[in-house]
Image (cartoon, rainbow, N blue to C red; front, side, top):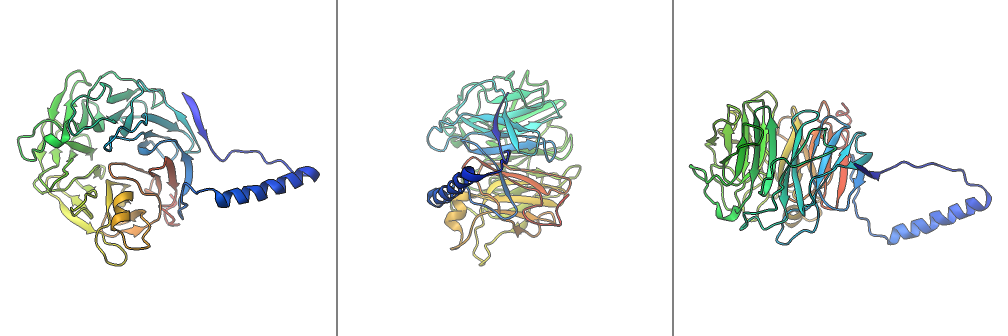
Length: 400
């Protein structure tokens, strides 16, 4: 590993005589330069900019408030990104980051990181290749670590456009977008182009689903897979209650969601349907029956009453505290004059929501919520910035 980022550590030296005059001049020059230098990162009340990388950050996983991993890169957006995938690790709450050793240089994005325990985990890779028509992606889209994320290797050699990964003892599961625009079969039987699962640690794989997006399990048996659906709603979520041995389609039509949040130990799941031009995508949806049926929990409108608060597709939280992030592109297009896109928090499992400042990101990105009360959030923007709040975005009651 190599340390690549270290912030806010410096030594103060007293200034005397000529050194004092030089110091004053340096301050003046610095202030002049500051006025004429574009500000790359807007400041948000309740949030701290803790790191800046040279490419976008789109996902992460944290063991606790201080120890975690983030993944970088840019997926296919109509052109090749030229941005290689990287994974970074912190052990001090984001003050310093170390680049992990990775098995291959791939232009694209790390789309998810999931740690099965403190040592063993997985990372999914979506190469910067046109997933709408292609079925080959470089042969290294699923990585594994056995040392807590410091070193990653590729024992699987999966040739897919992978969007999410999940693992537990006896089950390894990923979702994918291979040839996505031509696998538009939203009804049973599945076209089996949306994901693979393995019961033997990745030795053999079974295809399933249709254009999968996100994965969440509330316990070792009950899980939900969300689906990509660019055109219209459909029975597009998948449900298991036997650790992936059998899967059913949900009974309620859903629009696309990049992620799904499972309340640990319960049969309750949440999703935030992501922004899509011309589609209603401003509802927080909840299932209380393990994902089989879904109901609208909240419909978000702007402060002036206009509709259309738009989501990145990710919802996450701890306990009753949930968060979503506005889509930076769609929010700018849809929002009222003067609206600054941001993040929102709910303290009552999604019934009501509060504007809490913070960064926005493009859709199909993730953020991380941790802390005993869900008060610590690591969120990202499209400029490579990592933002952190330790009080839920400026709420003194959420201090852990």
